Length: 228
Picture 1 (cartoon, rainbow, N blue to C red):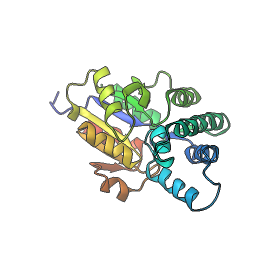
Picture 2 (cartoon, rainbow, N blue to C red):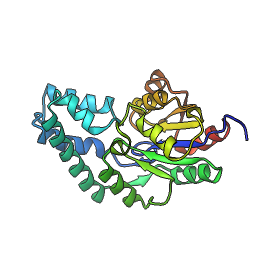
Picture 3 (cartoon, rainbow, N blue to C red):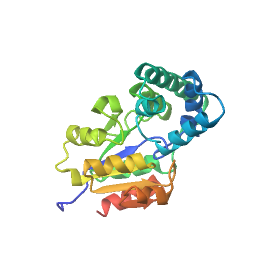
Picture 4 (cartoon, rainbow, N blue to C red):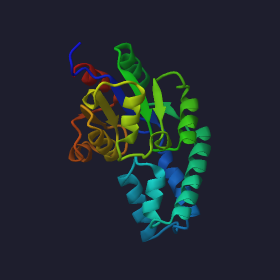
């Protein structure tokens, strides 16, 4: 076994391994109204842009920024977002990104541990996992509250490395569809910090954020990891 063999793949969920049909933006619209952001006008447009730009980050952090640090308002909006998202999960076509299950299985069959990370709360993540039937698909699932801080901080990736017994951070591969995923992987010191084109951000945005690789989808990720 070579010294640089990847031991852990930390994969994002919505937009990377899970197709949720744009539920994040739909749930945000509901939460923004609850938070008192006018349904139309410059403030709402600015908020929509910010949500897209910060896609992948812990949602409570996004609402703190949008609501000028008003902690009570941010928690209220975050709760409204989670309620709306979880309700939408029941009526939407939640599905794996094509090839995601096969990719995760291929990685684990090759001896690579797999963790799924998210910017959602634990309850929302659990709802997604249940909708997909993924309870036993991976070695570990982590929400921000399980690790300390959400993206763009490295906490979830490092928590996964500690819990799964990784020897060194450069033996971690991170995959996500947002610049926040890239920032997290770089902050964690991961050996591979890859972007995927099935979600929020473009190849240009992902590369500008510092991605070491960009793949068309998670289906292409095992070949990259196993060649490392």
